Image 1 (cartoon, rainbow, N blue to C red):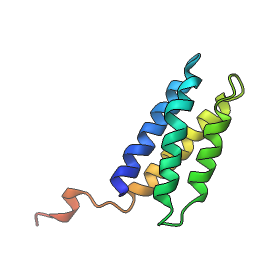
Image 2 (image 1 turned 135 degrees about the horizontal axis):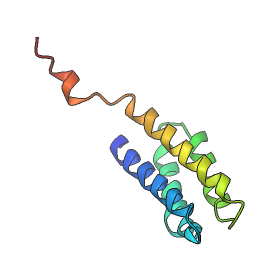
Image 3 (image 1 turned 45 degrees about the horizontal axis):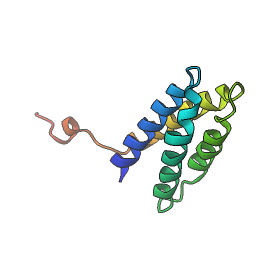
Image 4 (image 1 turned 30 degrees about the vertical axis):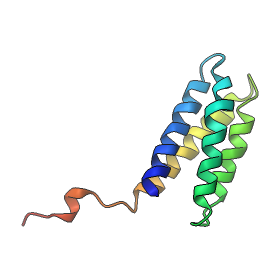
Length: 100
């Protein structure tokens, strides 16, 4: 489940980054909003809904052509924080097999 959320958050970051280019904000309708909704649904069992809810709001605010620049940057930051929170609990392959 965490790996799927990491992939979805990475795709959200890519969608927001494309939205920073002129007329790229239109990708928010097709990519970012559906992915943030899926992230919200996947967050329901973990009860950590506030970051995903804020990201949904930022996705809708990112539709504003000129002023949507700020919500896109905030969305990139929120998704990056979400990825770092998800990867904190994942152990790496190297740490499982210490060769001593």
